[in-house]
Image (cartoon, rainbow, N blue to C red; front, side, top):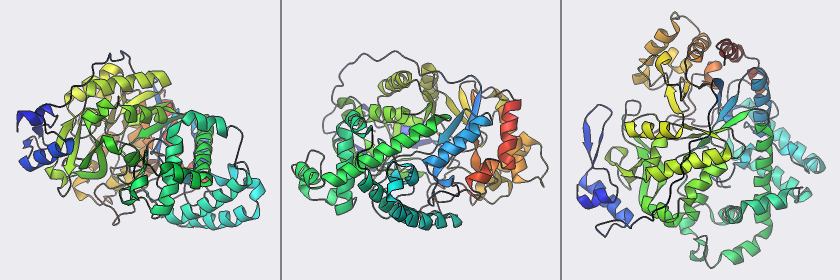
Length: 549
């Protein structure tokens, strides 16, 4: 690889999951240089700035919580999908049972179009909330709407009879109901002041949503005068769509209010995705800062032998620095709102990201370096400012330097039974411990060998070694024993997955699959009213209390 490529941040090689060195291909190098606009020998000189000297807000000494996919947490009153009222009720029950936290899937907004995007990690924006999580009846004005809301609610509640969530139908019914409530009460108390505090970002987001409803989400194909957030036709479009813009702002206000109510019941840990949809608001808004014809993913590893292509666009690190990291800071500030902690998905992305050029596969990608010192310093400063602790998801092929930097600023590491070879009692103090994540097999999926990835069935031996249970033990018993064992480790936080406590075999998401799997669309098998008193849930809570958490 040329010296020019390395100066522009392209990593010449990386250590593969089997221990060998993987060299960056010449074709990949040339494609990334073109995306960076790297015609000069050296990149633009970065402005020297004084980095804030801060550590992250401190995490609790010994606590525990639940990891929950909110869409899956349905009650008998849900409109076909778990919502913020369901979160509030579960939070109250979990807190009474001794939990300190709930780790949530990202609640980021999606494009208001069909088909409605199910993946919370491929959102339109990381800046605003997904309005599908609104509980319609709790919005001021719903009582005035009366009969129309009751009819829509009856249709939506029938969706709870199917375990597979139909986002398109849920969104259609909720949107119609919300439009009805908006007509009855378009100016709730507090809306005007809240909207002012959101600044131009809210107005731009509402504009984008209104334009999506007319032109579709493929904004690169919109009329040229509205293809950019500073386009010459934007002001005329805003004037013509003023009522619709007000509606989208109104929905965001109520999503913020309902999340705030839930956060008063328990500490919420929000999840910060590493990227966003290529046809969403963030990509439209920050288009000048993105590397064209590049997608973000990860190279092959033990869990995913073909690598992963997430389809998300990549920020050009040099342009990001010139913009003073505004997208990153804004994302952190939004994530910290109403949160006790925030989990950074794929935290290694602060150091380097795996870029996959168009028409290439994940195995042909290469790493590109990011200004880690500045990003890590900003993360610590924003954490301290918001009094929100940080968990860095440092799983997979992670360089040792990543964990050293995270330890230095006081970020927690993420340790999983599926990944760790060291005994759980040796796991570090500054960590959040768990068995699995949303992308990995559940306890029941491994114990019963129902998980479709047969190569991972060897993890059953790890469960046997950890729990000492016999082969005929039930998946719930195994999950209780596994989390009881983790409860005794020294890591500051233990996160128990609600799917494991209920014996769910399917994982929420299988990376690398799309329509062939019901990713992000499976509700939990029991309603919230039964989940709060389910045997596995109660026993895991008791084990955490017994361990002094």
